[in-house]
Length: 363
Image 1 (cartoon, rainbow, N blue to C red):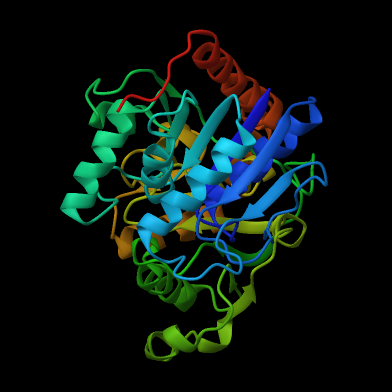
Image 2 (cartoon, helix red, strand yellow):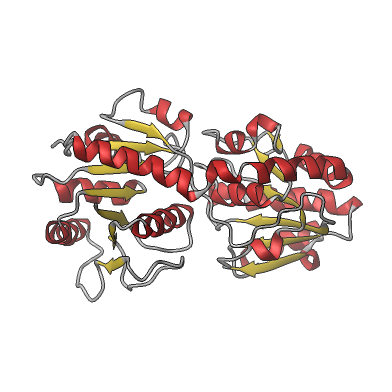
């Protein structure tokens, strides 16, 4: 099949990581794969891509390319030239661009919901436009049942498919001796709630001063410096920047922590869980951590924003080696469930169904 992914860019993000994983898997199976970066100005990807994947930055060297209508025109021209069997868009802005670019063509559009649809996008009018696009697209992939329920059946074909996991490191022993460090992986988006992260660690640190907090995905602590000083943890937080292969550096941590107010299905939590790191997370909507940590049986879930409770649970986890080993084994046992072959084949089955039944995009 000739498959075309549409994304804003291939930066260090959860949706982009899933695109890279699926694209590499599809091309490995012999499919022709193109990634069109709607807002991309450079032909580059943070995540490693097969040399057989055609990566195109639509805005490279183009004037006025930031204008929405210009991006739709560029995308339409590229899609008509590539003539894929199907276009797959990730994130609402790329989905909106792709929908209008494909109007009047026979190319089906499969869109993918990657966040909490109640919260993102925050703009009410854009949310209405997103809902219209999703209603008329050929199909939708949801990460979670709760996200699917939000749309209340107002779509043509919907499927819940989890994120795939590709680990760059594969520890097999859940009984390893763990280092006194807590791991956080995430961006600087507001909903990630780093303030809660530092509040939790500062409470935990008072009784556990020999622990450090390692933060991946953020280059420096400039934006957080005052908060770190206020909490007395400025010398106990290490910023590790953007690291694609953080697995080998963090696999032996005492715990992985996620403090988000809302998420889709958090890749970092899923990777940490299957890597075997004991995990503690906010039970944030629309239910990604709850799905990954199996309602608390595979990790610890805490109410959103509850710093004291999360710190207390983190302290309990750090002191309980048996609990660490239980969660570690649970995560390792879930690797097969989330591997790219299992998840990629679910995508391919849906793609083939849409193409076979000629479910084109409605105007």
